[in-house]
Amino acid sequence: MAGMAAETAEFAGGYGRFWELHDAIFANQPRLSPELLLTLVSALELPAQEFQEALASGLHAPKVQADFMGGVRSGVNGTPTFFINGVRHDADYSFTDLAANIEDAMLAMTR
Image 1 (cartoon, one colour):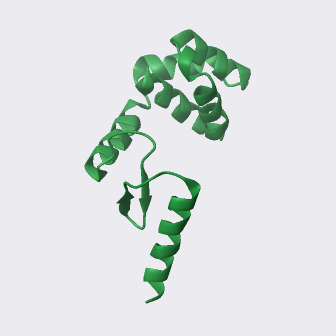
Image 2: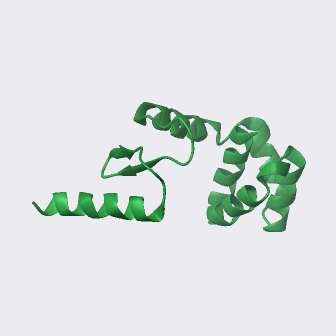
Image 3: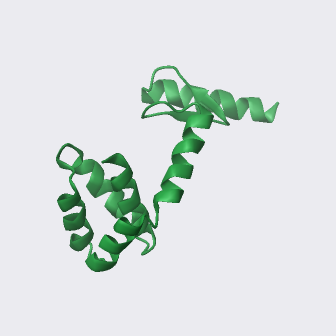
């Protein structure tokens, strides 16, 4: 289902609506189904028939697969995964910890 959801988001991106659909997918994550994805596309008033054709043909599958493999090569093995200046952040994901690591990275850039 994740691949289909990603292809759906890419389809919406072609209409400048990627983030709106992204947010709708995440808000409905426990209920995701092909039918719900079509409902979300329709709710954004995107062309449903074109969406179904894009999904059936795998139009956006190569980009989704390339993005996935890029993540694998970078060491991403789950979400969330954060990189700060190209270095994977494996510590706590709290705001305080992330902010401290970002500040450290910024200081290192000025040295």
